[in-house]
Length: 98
Image 1: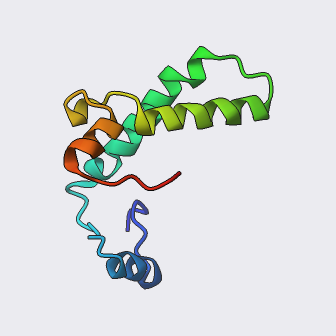
Image 2: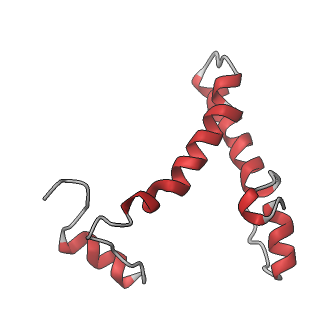
């Protein structure tokens, strides 16, 4: 075992019950992380690296603001340049209250 997968029956059982497919062959492993890596890259370059945070509270406030912006109002290439709010409306998806 190379240590890159969580393989206990307890862990994988929870995933399977939720309908999540578990890949153990490693062939598509890079794809598992690509979306979260893009999020972290955007967060660092669009928020963290641009500010000199004085306190943890200031960091938390700005991170919360940026995540709200990213999740609702920032145009995304994966959505053909639309903002998530626009994409939800076009798809007829009702947003849940935050």
